[in-house]
Length: 287
Image (tube, rainbow, N blue to C red; front, side, top):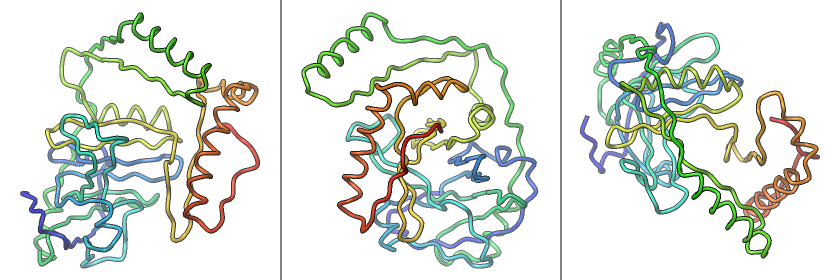
C-alpha cells in the first residue's frame, strides 16, 4: 500500500485466528514484532497501512476506528520508536510509528488478527485482507555463523579515555559499547532469531522494527523505558549486568550500586518536573 501523509484517519476490523504461532504470520516479512513472555504479550504485524509521529497520535490527530469489535490488542496498534539523537541508521528515521496492514496478537487464550485501512474502507474489504493470511515456517535456515569484533586496541584506547574522564570528574557514569558483526553463508531468518530470543529471555521485551529499506532492527531488552497506564507512569532504572544465575553478585558490588543510584537519581529528577507524586522502590533488586 502507498502511504500518503494526508491520511490521518484509519479503520480496522478484528476476528479470531488460528495461527500455529504468531511468528508464522504471512505472507511477506514481518513489519513489527513486540513480545514479553512473562507478561503474556505478543504482537506481530505485516505490511504498512499508515505512518505517523508520536505527537500526532497522542494529540488525537491520527485515529483508528474499530468497525466490528471491542477486542483490542494489548499493545499498539501503532509501533515504532525514536533515535537517541539526530544520528540515524540507514533506512531508519529519527522517529517513525507504523500502523501494520495486518496485526496479530495473543491474549493468553485466543489469537486475534486485525486488518487496517484508510477511513472509509468497508468492513468487507478489511475482512478480505484477513482471508489472505497464511502460515510460514519461521525456522528456515541453519547456517554457520562467524563472529567479528572491532579492533581490541581501539576498544582498549576508548576504555582508557573513559576512565580518565571519570577520574577527572567530567562524567558521573559512562556506558561503552562496541559492535559485533555476525556473518553467515546465507540469509538470516529473522523469525528464527526472534523465537530464540523469546525462549532465552522470557522476561525481556523482544522486538522487531522494519526500516524503510527493508532492514530490520531486532533485539531483546530487559528495560521498560516508560510505560503509561491512564495517569500513571512507570519507568525501570536498570544498571549492571551479569550472566544468568549470577545476579546476586550485582547487589554486593559498590560500583554497580553507585551506577544504579545515578540512574535512579536522573529518572526521579525528570519525573518530578512533570508528575504530581513520584514513588521509588525501597532498594535495588535483581531483574
